[in-house]
Image (cartoon, rainbow, N blue to C red):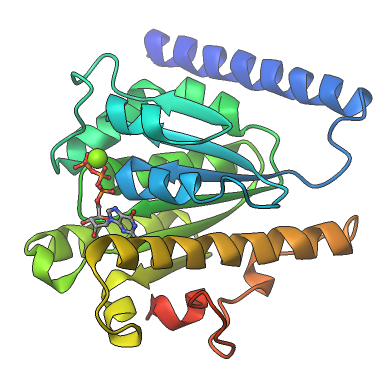
Amino acid sequence: MKGKQMENDSNLVNDLKRRDALMTANENGSTDCPRIAVVGVGGAGCNVISSFSGRECQVDTIAINTDRKALEKTEADKKIYICKEVLKGEGTRGDANLGKKCAECHIEEIRDALFGYEYVFVVAGLGGGTGSGAMPIVIDSAAIGGAETSAIAIKPFFFEGERKELAAKAYRRVQAVCRNSCLVDNNLIMSLEEDCDLNTAFSKVNEGIVDHIAEFAKSVEINSPRKKRISDIKPSRTERTGIIPLGLLVCA
Ligand SMILES: Nc1nc2c(ncn2[C@@H]2O[C@H](COP(=O)(O)OP(=O)(O)OP(=O)(O)O)[C@@H](O)[C@H]2O)c(=O)[nH]1
Ligand SMILES: [Mg+2]
């Protein structure tokens, strides 16, 4: 009981420290505009984050992974390696419990990175271990820091076997912590694009996600300081330009 009390006290002290840091930032005038972060979790999430590189988009990108090499290759404003105490840097090899444990071990680092954002998008591929296990923890951390959160979860291909069931379970855990969640189905790209190899399919889906978030960031910039809601931008299904609109890839 005493231990629990000490843990609560220490969480409170950390929250107060974060709030102080945020107020100092505000006094310096550095957070005038609503701040948006996009967090990629696991391999697919980090690939989406790299796809922001070179795009005119007013967001901070944060990559979180248990796979050291994949994280090194990711292009992001901030990287959080969540494997130090639990694994050896090679990912979880499909174990969502390990993915969850890794995120919990680094919860303070994740909360600090997400504190003070108005909007946080969390993106991950489901069916593996890191994204499936860590995504709900990351969403929760962003919400604790005061952000409105949106989850963009990627559903694996039909041919990926048991990953489909793991992904379905993981998505239920995501929905339990995030009202604004959508499931982007990798399979749908195959019905829209003929002769699409795996890497092309991945990058088209990833670009669709980047476009969707960029559209939101732009509308926040235009409407600022009037408060926008993430739920105002439903993935659109109508237009079809060079890149596939996210709405065409979202399943129920
Ligand atoms: N759209 C898209 N989907 C991807 C990409 N990479 C992987 N996926 C999908 O995401 C699912 C999860 O894979 P990863 O993200 O690599 O898994 P992880 O979260 O890193 O998990 P572990 O490596 O097992 O710890 C896969 O089954 C693929 O269907 C990508 O770049 N784009
Ligand atoms: Mg991985």
